[in-house]
Image (cartoon, rainbow, N blue to C red; front, side, top):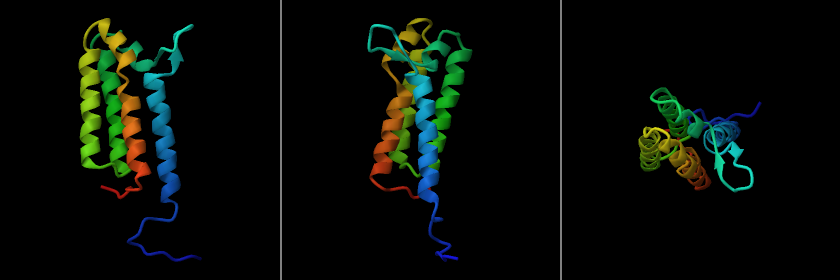
Length: 131
């Protein structure tokens, strides 16, 4: 049985990170770019649809976006990157709060996909220490 230093990360940590990242990528895609407007390159997701429901829709969308940030924190994303992610979600929430126009804004400002790009960039740098 292989031995490893108990202070070091378990040997299967990279696969756990990959599974988490894959799950978060799928969630971000569902929220921001699941469907395409026929005949165009415009993509939209559940976030834009939820914005059509005043009050409740943007709140639910913000909670799900906050979950992505929470998971990114568990993946070891730096504090600076987490703050940028929070800013993206804050701006998305502000956009979504405008009735009807917020849905259009959600189509063009896809905060969750932006946040996953930040997570990918951070993980590609190889800094995955738990924080």
